[in-house]
Length: 332
Image (cartoon, rainbow, N blue to C red; front, side, top):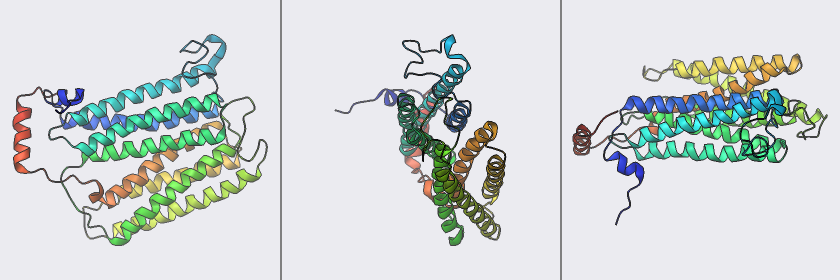
């Protein structure tokens, strides 16, 4: 005897159009980026312990009390962004499950976003409970990057219809994979830079990677981070040139060019903030840029290797059954 889930029961009675799916996955992706920016604002304003307990804010109060001041409001606002993210991800899950025909992989991707949100929320709570330990904060940020990756894949899958193999030059596919790897290393190095830098996330004494007041570790990691950034820029330029020379007009270098612009902007922000004392506003912008670079690197790979997430053609008889079934269902 098979067990029908609530979504399975609903899918037999209601169908959602592709517009709902695209809006849902877009909302999930945008709010995932907003989460990274919100975390950056919390860090640079010293509001990481604005709500000193978790899952409540202070004692038995879920909302910040007046004594917590502006830091409590900022940290609580950041937590509310997670609630907004859950709503967006729930929308994406529902829209994915109620598609006709149903794409199981797309639904699983949408659900993976939900579980990453849950894990990241728990990690965020742990960072508060351990007093903003820099390694736990780094893990919290990397989980946010994992969520961004899944949100990007879900967004891409929701827009892909029909199987289509990649006819991009072999060199471009190799460069795209290397670029993704270098970008991942760049983000990891940047996370360590933040963990060793002056913005601990709170105005009180918080442990730093390499020890409080020590600049040796920070200086070394900054050099590694800068080298990886330069490598990413060179790889992106090389990939753009290869794609521009491709004879297949369907392989557009636009995504690669956008990534190059974002990388160059990131480089300028990183250099300026190092020269003028790492101001809070530029740190927050740099964290936002890191999210955009990561999404861009994944999008470049998916554009160069469209076969990675191409859907299999739906058999004609199955499509006909789905259409006839959807015809008698309310379509939202």
